[in-house]
Structure formats: C-alpha cells, structure tokens
Length: 420
Image 1 (cartoon, rainbow, N blue to C red):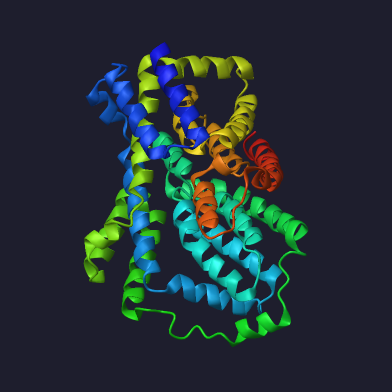
Image 2: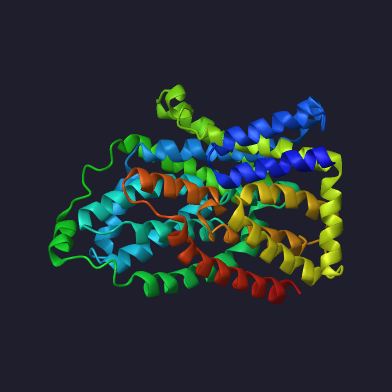
C-alpha cells in the first residue's frame, strides 16, 4: 500500500509541475507499478479502460477529417460576419460555438480546432486574442460537461457507472447551460473594453468572402453525413445496443473508408500522447485499487461526510474542484470513480446515484481554476504561447478562480435542488 501511494504521489507531483510531458510520466509511473509488483502485467492491462481510449481516438479522427474540408474556417468567417465584426459579439459567439462543439466532440479536440481560427480572426480585426482564448477555454470545460463525449472525465464516469448518452445529457445539460450563461455575463464584465474593433477593420471583415474557403465540398458532404449518423447513434446507443466507444470508432472507420484520404496520414494526427496518458493513468489507479489505497480513501471520505449523501455530494463537487485546480482533472476522476463505485449502493428508484453527477461537475468545472486544471487548458496555453500570446499562471487564475467558484456554487445548488 505504501509503495503504491508513493509511486502514485510522485507521478501526480510530476504531472502538476509539468516539466516533463504528462504522457511519459503516466506511462513511466504505470511501468514502475508493475516492476514494483504492486500489480501483475495481466492486472495492469485489465485496468486499461478501452471504452475511453476508443471513444477519444474515434472522435479525434472524425474532427481531423472534417477540419481538412475547411468547414471550421468557413464557420468562423460566417460567424464574424453574422455579428458584423463586433468584437463583443464575436467573443460571445466563439465562446458559445466552443461550448456546443465541446459537447458534440470533446473539449480537447474542439480547442485544437478553435484556437488557430481565433488567432486568424483576431489578426484580421487587429484584436488581442487573449480574451477570446480565455473565453473559449472556460467555455470548453463548461460545454464539455453536457455529454459523455464532451470531457475525458465524463467518459471515465459514464464507463464506471454504466450511464447512457441520453441519461447523461438529460442530467448535465441544464447545469451546463446555466453555467454558460454565467460565463457570458463575466466575459462582458471582464472584456467589454478590450475587444473593440475599429470601423476600418469591421468594414474589411464584412467585405471578406467565405467563397473558396471550403477546400473539398465532396469530402465535406461525406463528413457531415457520417458525423450526423454518429451523433444519432450516440443518442440511440441504448436502443441499438452499441456503446459510444464503438459508435465513435465505427464512424471514424467509415469516414476513413469513404474519404479517399491516406489512413496513415490521418492516424498520425491522432493525439497518441493523450491516449498514452490515459492508458498509463488507468494502470496507476488500478495499482492503487489493488494495493487497498482506494479503500482507505473511501473510508476517509465517508468519515468526513458523516455518512450523509448530501454531504458526500458536496464533497465531490468542492473537493473535485479544488483538486482539479492543482492537478489535471483526469487523474482525479479516474481515482475518485473507483471510490464512488464502492460507495454507490444504488438508489431506491434505480436511477443514477447523484454522487456521479457531483463527481462529474466537480472535476469538469474545477478544471477552469488553473492552467493545469484540464487538458484543454494546457492545449490552449501551449498554442497561444507558440503564437506569441503567452498567458501566465497568475493571469489565468485571476479569471479562472471566479468562473470556477461561481460554476461550482451553481453545481452545488443544482445537485441539492434536483436530487435532494
């Protein structure tokens, strides 16, 4: 037990410091777990959740192929013209688009697509992109709360608790929408004076044509058809009897087959480092479980809550939010999911235990507190820095603390009012 806790703690610390790529840290930590005989190689492989790995890989492939058609660039130009080049309108529009896309794809894939588009738009309008990037990263974590595929912690929770796509959305969309409204209000207060566009630049944007932006109309039609079928299958997966992971990977395979693109070229664009991080992480958490550390954590949480369900739910929200501010929300969720599995003894009416919703909200929305709080945050900060627009830890925290705190309070009120 001590060996597992030490390995896990050192790995967590290395992830939080962030000087070594997280994928390397997670895989190395997993290997050390096996070499230290905390768990056998067979047990390690059993703990790798292929539902999560396949779902993320499938959605990454779909998003990459769609991006090659120019559809996302076209949407950005049309959006800018829709708000007539108004900076505040564009700020709100990009945040809303990011939130919606994060619910349908996943928030990491969404920000990978949105950040380059945003940088191009801000360059055209002579605007500082930092307010837009901050709005998008906060919106990605809020929108990603809404569905199973929206944020990696959701996939972990849904897999552990066997929650269907529709059931997850029905419970999470309302609180996600309320949190997004809160974000819109804060963006207005924070940045209304920083996103003003000159009349000259607005006139140039209105004169910009979206004609010719679509690079491959035939591929776009195929991509949209397959994507629509994939989303439809997500909503009906309980009926058709196919899990979201195989829906996503099946959709990706079909689109690869009919796209005419070289599979190797597409597969090279998959975030294999992210998937490797997940695999290593699952083994690390599995080692904690095999060594009995998870049982100890469960006892501590139950003691702290006094055994009251409401207290447990609030602990999941605020403990999750607080820890996700310090470390990435993925390892926290993977660990706590195993704790909730043991606590969850079912509900009288057979519905999903509210503890799962509390865990999801704490992990997802707490990720907005700091740069290291969520994978989407790290992606945005990295790309922004490379483009010459660094966002420091303190600057991010100044805004993240407020939106994180408000959305966690909204979540606590939602959980208490709806389920208790």
